[in-house]
View 1 (cartoon, one colour):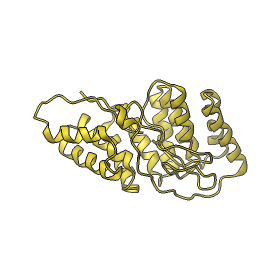
View 2 (tube, rainbow, N blue to C red):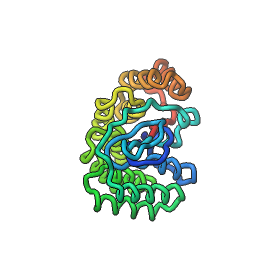
View 3 (cartoon, rainbow, N blue to C red):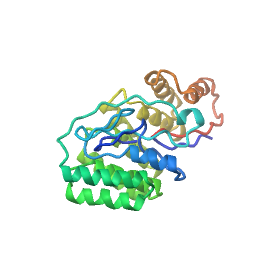
View 4 (tube, rainbow, N blue to C red):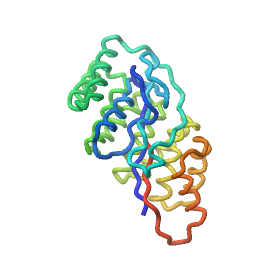
Length: 254
């Protein structure tokens, strides 16, 4: 049967990113640690697939983790950058230091750096989002949820944070909350592909609503120009699935 692991946040403070922020949990390896580093966020904005900008504070979600091969590398539609107030220079330096620590595999140092930022700059949601990514990577589900919840409270306009919160809720088995978080991410940015996919997987695997899952998978395919072969197979599977038929393993996208 399909197993899922959700899809990530954005908006932070400087340094070039990739295209896919922190997603669900998986074994730590240099590639994933780098993905997390690229997903670092400061206060209230993010953009998939484009360099993070210090002033605009953008963040990109990390690659779909452990999804079936094709899904893992599938491109995700970029979410709009929301320009927030400039980050104080001292906070920017602290963020950059924490980012470098995470990129170097020093998760403990990165955690301390982001935690310090939550105290010195309590108005910023990005440090909390990055702590959520670090805790989820470490298997600390409750702490991850708490940090993502705080990030969404401080930066309620950030769809990436809600997508990450949905992943965290799903991993805790809180499916109703996961659905609400994904739906909020989509409401904030209907062109943001990751929550479309994650919500589809939630309906498919956990809520038993194949019809709704099919709609969401097809929407995701439109947003990503049909480049995700794995999701294409899921669409075909749903269209041909017979009642009671066993599902195939699948994971959400960060």
